[in-house]
Image 1 (cartoon, rainbow, N blue to C red):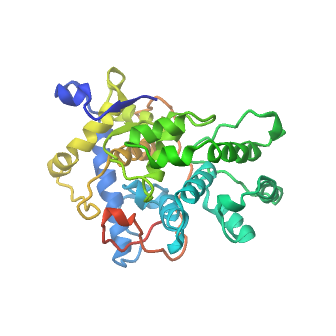
Image 2: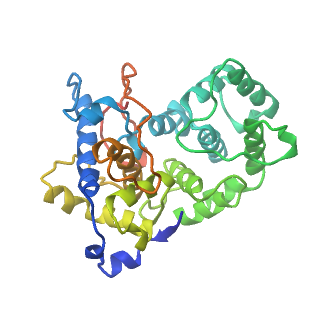
Image 3: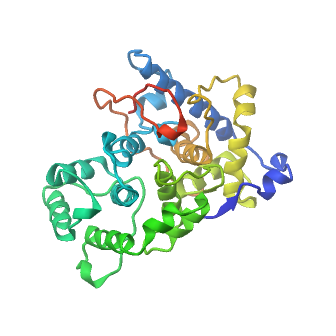
Length: 338
């Protein structure tokens, strides 16, 4: 997984014509537009089903904007901004890292119900360990399946994965990371700070940097660079039959730069979030989603992963919370997420 600066060779030399798009390339833009329409139809109170697309009806996909998706929305509203409760930079950092290690809303909710408030000031590894162990004993899962969180290899863990991550979190918080994060000058620098810790690779480090950038403790440009995850790499390989000749981060940058032209060329209406177009992180995520979508829409394109089925089906989960974005974005959107 490689990252590259915004001024990439692909963009600078205008080599878009060298890429050979497949039909999945157009599916990428159609998926983005229709998935966004589904979100807005739900905002407007239109009764379901919210699309004529049988694949989008049957299977679960994230929103076009990462920050509008269910887990990110929960993170922004309840974890980062604590439902309006004020938190110091240290506490914001601790809460974001803890949530993202597991990346599972239900795990956070159980911890909150048991602890009342989640904060580093009262962090007790033994107590957290006991709660997480009980979740597992009751047949529950503590980690999301969205991405793999590698275990921390420490003898103190006794082979228990979550114990290693609690120890890692404690080590991070006592390492002087708070000051370095707050004083970071760019998203890339923030990414580098996170990458220095065990179990945090390039893709996870990038995702954590984006999540911390939702908060008020840093304010970096999301357009600075991008890291392509495994799902995005698969989606890229399906959209272009010679993608291996290009850096995947360059291709993501290209999609971000061309979004307005491509929606216009295909006659698609894409309703952005106010004046905020799709960012690099969103275009990266959309490659992940079209990787899944094309398993049904274009099964003849196997991609580098070779997966054939979409595992998660769509299930409406009751009433939706209004969308809540970082106040520093100055967006006035009222919506719900699924």
